[in-house]
Image (cartoon, rainbow, N blue to C red; front, side, top):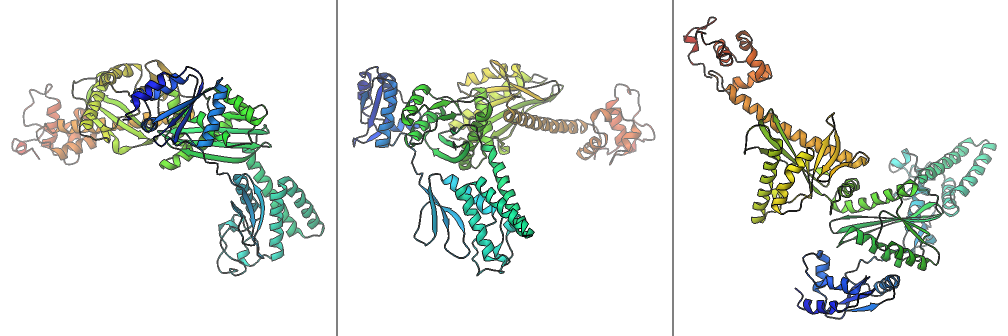
Length: 632
């Protein structure tokens, strides 16, 4: 606990209620955090009040604050400009900082007879030829990769002519992405012609290269050199195919940045797709720790990112709105010295680009956790759809199963990071009553579940029942939800609970909460995910119910004289159901495996006792001596 907390709060309460920037310092007078506020008094005093509601990052920062200063500004806009300037100047420890590591990139052409093309971030004194510099490493990397594929240049580690004929050509040769000089079948002049065409492609662009190759193709055809003409034709075709692939990310706007963020727990990922001349020319991704909230991270990222950039585009598309959006837009306009626009597209071309950017942000975040971006993305959709405070990484789902009130059981399945966690599945036998009462059964199951959580907490266990779910989904409608919610409320825990509703064809239709139904069909990924959960919990619970019924059937048959476990099992296997056994004649029962006539007679008499009170013990050829020792 910071011993100066009360003094700092007293000082904060004396601040004016005006816009300004506050500067937190540690004992060494080092600046550790810089922030802005519409009302300095309200914002700064929050830091030095109760620490229970603060995220971990804020608590750590407050713990190290020894003093603070502040600067009053005339407007929120001036406040924003000053904050960005001071953060760039001092790079405080607890602010979100983005390192400007965007160096220059080069195209490297080796100095040897059989030249190679590659992209590098730094020039070296190695005698090679360097073309550049280029600001976008992404552009250089993708362009060099395209050139090598189109013109069939090798990217392996083999040396020429030393390695001619020493090994078979690699896969690239067979998929027509390498001319395979390793075979020794291509002439050096022809190879260097490919290199020059690739360099022309990199420097002049695809359109100019296509024009040059078409001229060469026509000239070769006129000279009846059809083999060479075919090679030019193939290169032209490859360029056009590559250009068609790039249409996926072509846009109508000349200048556009697309920004999307993904947050899971305290980790965040921000992705920027940069477009110029209607083409994607750069992509960047940033991973940041100690995130307080997605909304704050998005706003802070945009401010930090464009503090480091001088080339601000006219249009910036975001995946969601940020606080003080108009103020940030004005700040970007001032830095650009021309009008800049911030927006959140809801449809059309830019909305598709934002969705693609969001998927990339989740993919980068997912790589750290060993899951896929698609899985994190569907959890984010579910979080937004249900209005959850955090990503539902750990989901528990429950279903009740019985047959006409008999063998009343429940199944619990768990999904962690959108994947089934079968080691956490649990089965429940309903104990508090007999008969059919799905609502009562669900109340009992959840009560027992949270009792187990309390016990686990007392024992210091945080796995299995000792871990609270981020979301509970019940296989049922509003009635199930209404019956289950009071159980959670009584525990004092905050666990979101919803039901999964099926239509008349027993297919998932919607999610239902305390406020009513939430449609999920328009959200295809969420719809598929919820359907998978509902199908899985139903499968698990009904499988458990069937196993219990089977045990019950076996035990009921074992009550008959002469029927043990083996015969009970064979009877059920042969007749399939108890009903079929009860309706079978003595002759039919005798036909079952391991059955004798005395045993068949005992089974028949068990199910027809009321009808056969006058039936003698010895019947249909069964003697008294044969009834002895019927138990097997």
